[in-house]
Length: 59
Image (cartoon, rainbow, N blue to C red; front, side, top):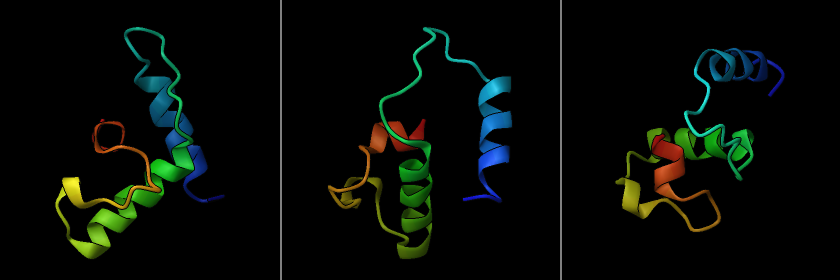
């Protein structure tokens, strides 16, 4: 996480939400979902239920 966190913080600073919504899912969980989807090469609908919903991950 120490390697990824600065890049995520920089991206979030450069791309603020239009509605100023900070999100209710931890960024680490979204990164985990992206890594899982890439590793398993599964469809977005097949992400495990313990990860954030696909809409949050895709955004």
